[in-house]
Amino acid sequence: MKKDERVKIIIKRLEEIYPDTPIPLDHQNSFTLLVAVVLSAQSTDKKVNELTKELFMVAPSAKKMYILGEQKIYNYIKQLGLAKTKAKNTYNLSRIIYEKFNNIVPNSFEELESLPGVGHKTASVVMSQVFGVPSFPVDTHIHRLSQRWGLSSGKNVIQTEKDLKKLFPKDRWNKLHLQIIFYGREYCSARGCNGTICNLCMELYPNRKKPIICRKA
Image (cartoon, rainbow, N blue to C red; front, side, top):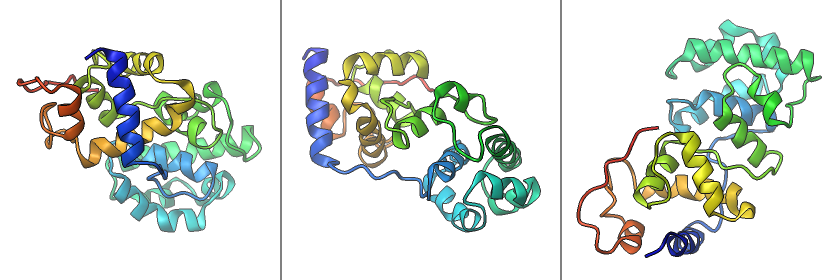
């Protein structure tokens, strides 16, 4: 099966399974989504949602988060991995958004990526989900499935993103990246599938016998 044929099947199947793609991180606005994504690094969405429920009640804006202060931010999120670093980054990015951007989350990749703790993936999530700019944030699930589905060599997440953007229609990027994440969590997890077990892997590669060893992100 050719790559373009696999792409068509992937789009069709994921649309059938996930016609709706709610953002898995709870948030109230663009600022709280940005913070939630920053906090989600090396943490589960479930845990982030649990801990940010109270945090976002008291600090739903950059100004209020800045006033809250680094130590109090840490007290809310201390159960997360890398909590001290995340608290520091959250405080500093809040200060910058308040002081430099008039309490409004910037709407460009360059400005977002200039914020503490905000890398390209985080900026891509905000640009796609808040501002509707076509983006293809690549997390570990997307990086893994791209290799299992023969869409990318998986050298690194930057290359994976470039490969996926070439293969999929631009108007599908924002929804598709969530669909792939959902599928990776539910059906094609790191331990639950090896490229030969889940329905989509078997449909794309019906004759594949050997497990696929994926390069890590």
